Amino acid sequence: MNITFLGTGTSSGIPIIGCDCPVCMSANPKNKRLRSSILVEADGVYLVVDTAPDFREQALRYRIPRVDAVLFTHAHADHVFGFDDIRRFNTIQGARIPAYGAPETINDLRRIFSYIGMNPKTKGLYRPDIEYHAVDNRFKIGDIFVEPLPVEHGGIATFGYVFEHLEKTVGYFPDCHEMSPAVIEKLRGIDIMILDALRYREHRTHLTVEASIAILKQIGAHSSYMTHMCHDVDHDELEDSLPTGMHVSYDGLVLTL
Image 1 (cartoon, helix red, strand yellow):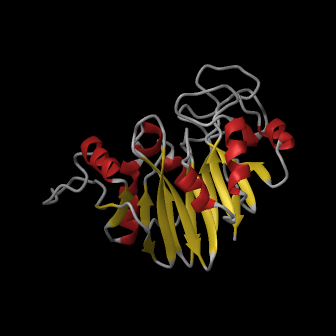
Image 2 (cartoon, rainbow, N blue to C red):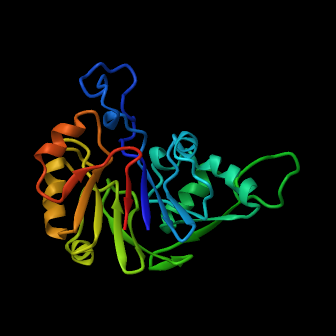
């Protein structure tokens, strides 16, 4: 199983428009962050988690060959506004593409993208052909098992996902303010854990770096990665300060299990 970080930034992306702070002006490519998303691949099956506004650029930059399913963590703009670009993969693959999320997330997608999934199709219109699936339990795509787990993120229904293939497991939780003891226990000892770490200062809907470290210590993954970071976070400075086994993700990073 391969995990590619398509983007590791918060909703504004890094650099932020009109900002001349040290991180936004940094020459370090690891400080350039598109909006958060990952690509999961195993045995030729490709899953995209969230279609960021940068999805077209991410697909081109990382040469995504196909999309067998899209999984949504929640329906905030920075996680869904690239959804329309899935239509190109409908054309490439000649098939409908399934999309998964919490029931509330699927309802929001249907509202935001009211033209997607309309039948009958209208000749001359080019839009995604999507089959929606509201989920709340473990399911399977190809040979990849997927388990959605709920987290608190400012009152909107939000999932993180655990991916399992050949007894290797990865958790992806990019937007999280609080994680219940039951979910932490479920994740304990996972092979790779990827978790929200927005900034050092408190935020009402995201984990701080300090809070993320505390949760990652409880989970005790074999290796852990922080994501969804804003321009307060310099990659190298944070990487050098983290406990053993914890890392800062960056756009284009590939993890192989």
